[in-house]
Structures are given as C-alpha cells and as structure tokens.
Image 1 (cartoon, rainbow, N blue to C red):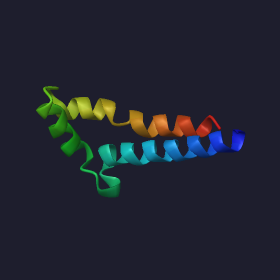
Image 2: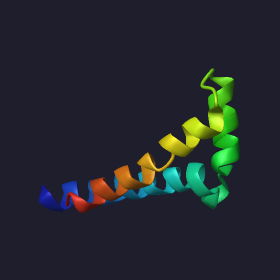
Image 3: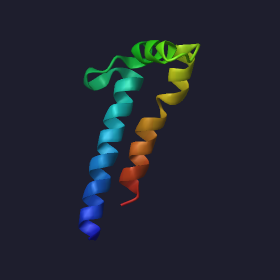
Image 4: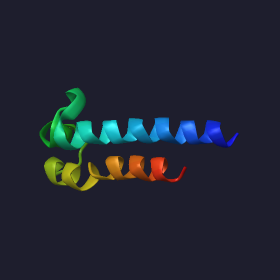
Length: 70
C-alpha cells in the first residue's frame, strides 16, 4: 500500500511540475506566460499576464509538495 501511494504521489507530482513549467516557462511545448496570459484574458481575467504570473508558479510548487509528501 505504501509503495503504491508513493508511486502515485511521484507520478502526479511529476505531472503537476511539468504542467506548471509549461505555463510558467514554455517548456515541454507550452506557451509560457504570454500564452497563459492570453488564455486568462479570454476568460475575462484582466490583466491576463499579471494573473498568469501570479498563478503559474503554483503548479510546480504544488507538484513538488505532492512528491515530497512520500
């Protein structure tokens, strides 16, 4: 049970880190802050780039927390 939970945490944490880096830096085929800001503006969150800059770092940190909890 503990091994399975650890594997799940590592997998989900890694996915969150990757997803966050797409939004933050454009790694792994992401658009970076500019594209994320444009997406935020299309949803009515203005200014989009400021909202993206505030929200994007949360995903990589969230992923690290998932992985560290093992």
